[in-house]
Length: 486
Ligand code: ADP
Ligand code: MG
Image: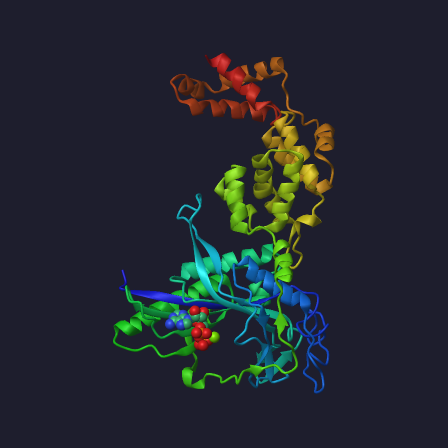
């Protein structure tokens, strides 16, 4: 046990999903040919002027409302200066002292050790969220550097936390919850591999019980949520080792090298930028009315954790099922639409979580990632299938086969069951014959069952199901077997 504890604050940049860039009508999307999504405003040509993107402002306010931030009445724009080829204007339009959102919090879940029950929840405090423009992307190749301005000017929010995170696992939980919230609300796709979400981590250590913050180090180049966790784990160990050896921590920026699994110095405090912030003379401050705010709030969906609690309490769904279902908006909408047709939450949720997701990943390959809407299955179609099970027309086992067939062929459950003759047999006479055969074939299980081992009956039942290719009505088989064995 170490007598030091870590204190962590995160700065997270997220690209908003909007039709056009922050200050001009050029679009931005990932994967276009380099330098095709530009125009004179993006390239910072003399004489061009920025025009505000209302959709980006509205989405930022919505992110703030979702996370319980205060939205001030007035928010303004500032120029942040630095000279670097990823930014042709030599300044970035950002927000300094009057951001769009102040305070707020993100609810996190620390997963339980077993993963089968809900873990501990707590809130991590935010400092602020501001809106700015993204910069271009530099690629350094041996002797030259290449620049792509596609990303330049894309709407980017920066979410800054208080130093309120105390372990790499909490940082992991924070980023997971933040991503789930933003994705669910359609604010961003938050794909870290595509640079849609990027995180810098500030970390210091202090003796346990101390209130005073230690000197912080900023970590950069953390390219995935687990990268953030790994980088922090290394850096915390390094700092504790340093302090215990009598050394001091210098305020600096360090780069995480995932291949070598270590951090190294990029720049020290003396080299820190002086951004010479001043109000942007090209843009008016924005005034945010109560009406505007409340109409934006009304359009927001329920947050994933709130939905999860509701599904567990009202629909009695197990934690493991809701933890897969609830962060995924497509699945939730599909689930609720099916539930409106046939009221069996467990039956519908189980097939979505256990079968649909694997069908989706089977249909996807590399860049060809399939969405739920790409599959020829509707909520009504799934409801019909579950109803067939509930009406004892087909067994659960057969339902899985039918479901897979529905996805392959687009046919309805009813048609597949008819065509393939999958209706379960409730023909008592026929089943009695098969049950008797299986009792003869499993003398050991029979003996165990008679000796009080309740579960031994499953082996015999399994034999009957196999002999009937899953078509026997399991409840009827159970009844017949128990009568024969008593
Ligand atoms: P800077 O001016 O260097 O950008 P800020 O005060 O703006 O520093 O904080 C940036 C981030 O660093 C925030 O997320 C904040 O919570 C975090 N932070 C600040 N001080 C510490 C510290 N001593 N230890 C860990 N994190 C810190
Ligand atoms: Mg700062």
